[in-house]
Image (cartoon, rainbow, N blue to C red; front, side, top):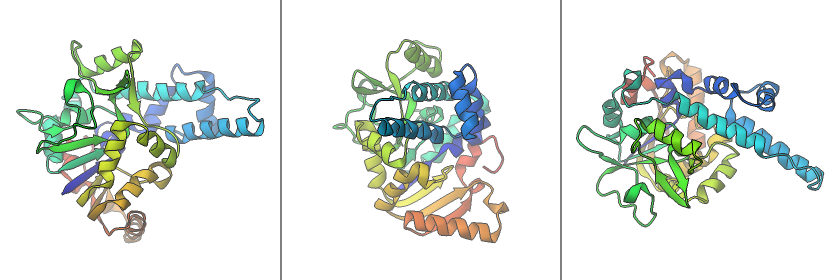
Length: 312
């Protein structure tokens, strides 16, 4: 089996707006003074780091005061909501935005039996469709809803959104994929549901790897995706993913638990790295994943053809 794991590097390669620094600028616009002060005080543009710090502070204050001081959840809720708004504002209104042809992305991931992604944005929404039909399944079959008893790939390749996505909503205890329906664009359909409080995107964005995994296991769709990642076999290509243990330790553990025998890791501008830097990265990845890792420059992967940055 051929497997692909995609991280936020793909989105950043398409638009630098998806970098944490650009998203941070969007979030602090029209945010409360408290949120702006947090970003400045902690000197970070990493949302996951900030949300984790807020959660830790809440736990500490409640513990040392024996519950007498309750730190409001509203700050975390605001940061999370603003992050979703920021990512959504960066989303293309249509598949041809940025002058990119989604067919190239479809052709790139069609070379894999399974594609796993931790990205939230909607680029991969269009990638499921080939020139004539949707040829990559996402398991939202009946009325766009996920049903764990109906996960037959039907002989096709599959894509798994490991941390959810802006177009996947929790509605009346159901996990549903949003389509544009009567709206002009998918983006408008998402915004309409959020503004009318008709569900909320399924979106894992905060906490330690252990907490993320707990949230994943509590959701039938996300747990299904994670189980598929753990049970993959054969080859795995990793593109645009840092595999940072403090953020994605649960992803690393899933790869280690899998039956993958060969891993190719595509690194941005690897050809400009020194021999020592390459050896250090290679040694680090070998240790983390428990399998021999081959390093490649990201320009060698077909996904780079879908990038606005040369050689990503």
